[in-house]
Image (cartoon, rainbow, N blue to C red; front, side, top):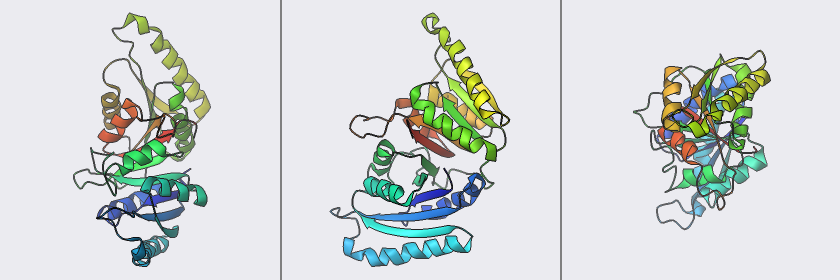
Length: 274
């Protein structure tokens, strides 16, 4: 999954942070990187399409720097809707993950323009990795090694669960936080037993690569997930989302969106069915 990562590049100061995250992601198998910059025609503050060669030269310089560090790197400059173009190139080049910079606690705000990251998150048909790029957010420098899976046992979490199980063999012991709402609600009393059984089944699938588990039966899910991530020193939060249709899926799901907005660490958003 992480072997080939497509990186959305906007030539902002955020690039230095994204480059450091690629170094950390070697631990999860990252070897190949495709850098993509999208020229957005029809927007008054965006570069004109005919300026493409200038941006191709700049992007190729970034790719050359990655090759010097041992990555297999290439560069693509294209024009159109940013989210659509990023997904098109990811499909054509076979990238397993898309990496985009986010703005600290405002993770689903501007990447290049307005709601681009939100549009990308809604449309994506493959895992989207969000990396906080605000200077105020202190990200670890060490290789990624402590993943946290957030699950409620639903179908929407299945892709995230599969991603967690795939990275677990490359990491130290992971963490699973299972979130429900049974405490103080007798009508939901069965949820705790169901989630316990679900987590036990995940442990069976993990085999020798065990994980710690935390069951939460009350409180705001996104807040509890952030709390557990902080307490357990997680450096990668993995959460699922519904589908990848921007019309049918007008919202990511309140918990997934809130986790992405509030995360102060790498966050992997995994579409249902990916």
